[in-house]
Structures are given as structure tokens and as C-alpha cells.
Amino acid sequence: MNASKILQQLMQQAGSGQKGSGVDVKGILDGLSKQLGGSNEKQGDDASGGFDMKSLLGGSAMGLLVGSKRGRKMGGKALKYGAIAGVGMLAWKAWQSSQATKNESTADNGEGERVEVLNGEYQERRSLELLQAMIMAARADGHIDEQEQALITQQIDALGADQEMHDWVERQLKAPLDAQALAREADSPQAAREMYLISVAVTDEQNPMERAWLDQLATALKLDKDVTKELERQAIAAG
Image 1 (cartoon, rainbow, N blue to C red):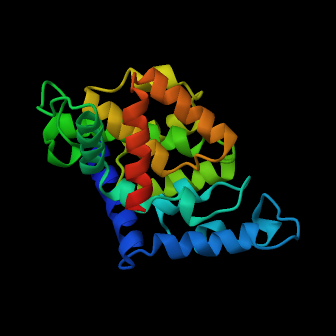
Image 2 (image 1 turned 180 degrees about the horizontal axis):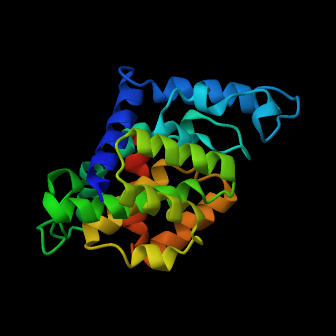
């Protein structure tokens, strides 16, 4: 399985969208917002609904993951590209900030490494954890249908997914949403923070269903309120 390769490319897509170079993820999703939410006319759920999602998203797997949210208006507040691009560093900074406000030590006492500095099997495992968290968060509002699931899988394949990775993604797109099961995959406190942060990055915390998912996940990951608040602040600040 080549999860680390896929995650790195998704992070690069997010960074490109934020910086306005390479794949313009923000521009793609703004276009989707106008087509899905910018009109009072009824929008269909299939190819006859007036838009071609695959061509509109320009082959962006990141765009598909965070763009398949028909139940609400797509806007910049819900799509935090910088948080995806720098998930490890931002999660670490959030933990340091939360500790500083409590005058507690920020020494690394088994906290775990950031995803960006891991190697080999450790990087692969963390990448799987983050991809799983991202997919579950993207599904939390219930608006990824079978057509969109197929498109996401196709675009993950286009990033170079091997057969094992392809099969894993298909399973994740159909598996029950289970915060406890997801949390059990976290290999360290740093991994838990990264999983929560990347979930915040692809959800709208003002959407009740997505807010409920974030709350369930925070509880399952055993993150205290100070840390989750700081993780959300870092995600919003990163944009």
C-alpha cells in the first residue's frame, strides 16, 4: 500500500490551492459553490443536473473529497487548505500553545513525531490514519453519494494508488462512521491531534452533523477542550 504517497500529494494539492499556484483547489471549489449553491433553481443529483463534477473539479482528489457537500453552501470558511497542507506542524503548535496557557511543560514526553518527519512504515501508518480521518470527516454530513464515491476513487487512483490502496479507499467510503474505531488507529498523542485537525480542515464546524462528528471524534481521541479549541483555532488561522 502506498498511503504516504497519496497523502503527500493531497497535502501538496491543498498547499497549491492555498497559495494560488499549481492546482487551484480553492478556485475549483468556488466554481462548484456557484453551480451548486449560487442559484435558486433545483440542482439534480446526477449527470443531468446541470454540471459535470469530474471536469469542474479538474481531476483534483482533494477537491472531490471536500467538494462533495451538496447539503450546504460551499464557502471558504469550511475548506481549510492551509491546515491540510501543514497538518503536522499546526497540530504540534496547537499542543504547545494549549500547554503554555496552562503553564505546563511542552517537552516531548512520548507525544510522537509529526507526520512530515516520519519515515518508512511509521509514515505509512500515520498517512493511513490521516486519510481515514479525512474520508470519514468528508462523509460526516451524509452528502457523498455512490457516483461521487466512484469519482473520488478514480482520482485517488490517478495520484498513483496501488491496488491495495484502491481497495482500502473503496472500503473507507462505504464503512460505517465510527469515531471510536477511528480513534483506536491513532498511534500517539500527536497522531490524535493530527487526525482531529485534518477532520476540522474538511468540515464546516457550523454544520450540526459535522459539528457532532467532531465532538464525537474529540471524545474518542481523548483530546481535552483546550487542545481541541486550539486545534480549531490553528485550522481557521491557516485558512
